Length: 79
Image (cartoon, rainbow, N blue to C red; front, side, top):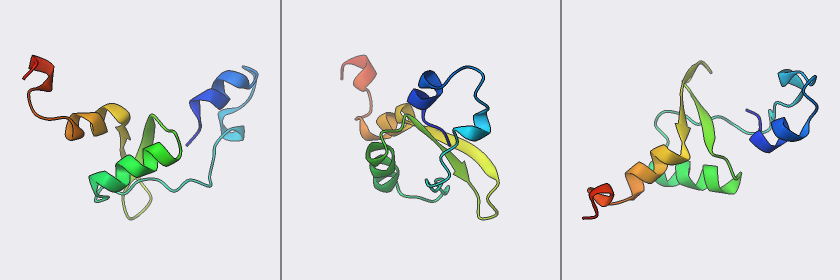
């Protein structure tokens, strides 16, 4: 995982591997929503990788995904 702000600050010639933050554990598919929310908020992330028990990437979770689950149904319709 890498932080978007770091990508913007580092010179364009910087290799992606040099800005990866290996100290953050990825999210597991079965992590409960409150823990996903806390994870994103704690590290000020807009997205995080989701990996299976073998460490294989299976997807990503974004702040938009979390908001969709936290907001009440029909909020887009004004109701």
